[in-house]
Image (cartoon, rainbow, N blue to C red; front, side, top):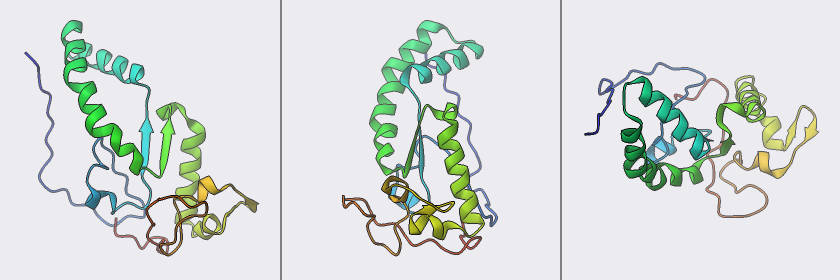
Length: 169
């Protein structure tokens, strides 16, 4: 017997205008139409052992048996993650290894969002942050006016950035 803990939200959620809106979910990049709404897409990459241990601890607190937890994980959870969630990693602009333990990546993302909100995104587009030139890898996800970032490759073109505080989502 597999216990299903499903938490349903109402069909529609009203989202009011905001400078920054964060969406999270394991399948958030699965659909092209949804991916196209985002300016910046982040994939938090966590080691499979860490994912399993978190699941075991959570499910044991819920009163589940360890054998049941491991059986469900190996039979359903891990294969589903590998088939549906992991392939969406390729759509991310930034992949954060080690999840919340990676403070360097988190701080860079926070700074990038603050730059956008402060109208300083043009520094990122010109290839300069705080007066210092940075490598092509940071510029990868912010190509201007549909042009491909330097370095070639088959990356999809990004939409041009709008002025701060004007994005509807």
